[in-house]
Image (cartoon, rainbow, N blue to C red; front, side, top):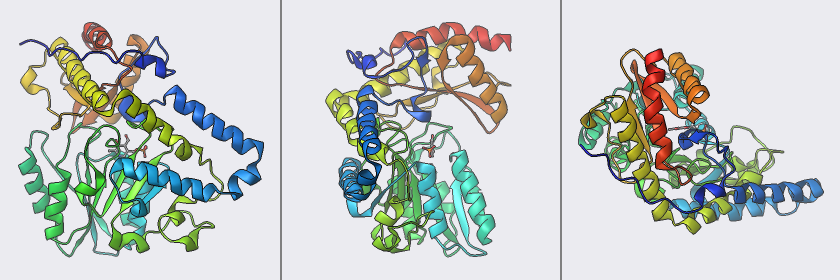
Length: 393
Ligand SMILES: Cc1ncc(COP(=O)(O)O)c(C=O)c1O
């Protein structure tokens, strides 16, 4: 079978980033990469802050954050009054969990495609409150209809106080039909938190169209914001119940300001985040999305071919703009999280390529991303060199 054509490159895009040119950066999904223009904008804000810290913090900062929040929420297709800026998706999840008022006997349901740190957060909140967590297994090959049905069957109305589902899963790079999942959960009276960590900038879906009770997403991954920029979106009936992790001076201001204001922090990532959106829009949002997804698909095929994986065994992500793709590793490799991390480090060191290696249910997976700064030859080089590295053990 023929490998799909790689997309036309976006001219000059690599120069927008300060990435080390001697490395192939094929894992945008984990920590993003901040364009130089965004770094500069943040530095200008830091210069302003250091020129007069008192003035920066006490004159208009809350209003500047409000203005920025409106800008970012509009981009996300979320109600600005229901959106709070937070430092990252993990924080947003923790804010929701500890605001629920879980009690002994209550349960929180997740899937086995969820993010590890979120699972830890659920476990701790359950231990603290006497609630229990339950993980619903969802086969990697399940169709959207099957996913919805499996999750629906996994809920216990009255007992399940929260369902957490990922919009695009991290270990399995799978798009979940979140709007349909929210629909069946609502029928059973189960509130849903959608973890959209990878959605902003990558997926064309608007937050409002999902209809979840809670949604969290990072702008510091695919929306080119400085690290520390994420949004927590809360449906109207829940807003008054949402409490910040840290109580500070804006506690009496209500949602969202009381969640956002976390004492003396560096708020410059949020204020610089609109420059990330500007960069994205300047390149052309649709063009970036199509490019990145096509490049990830290309990388998946060339590296998959090199490892002898039949095209039919390469997981489909479930959406046209998903820019992360999985390749199964040969049996026996990366079967545990430690082994996956060791292999990732070895690929970085020996092949000068940053990739994600995940272990999911005892199977090792390579996860490759596509971004505007990547070129097809980076995946070609990995395809040539990876089989030898893996064979060497
Ligand atoms: C699905 C998912 N949820 C949550 C996170 C956590 O993001 P952060 O470290 O920015 O909180 C990630 C990070 O990759 C993720 O993939």
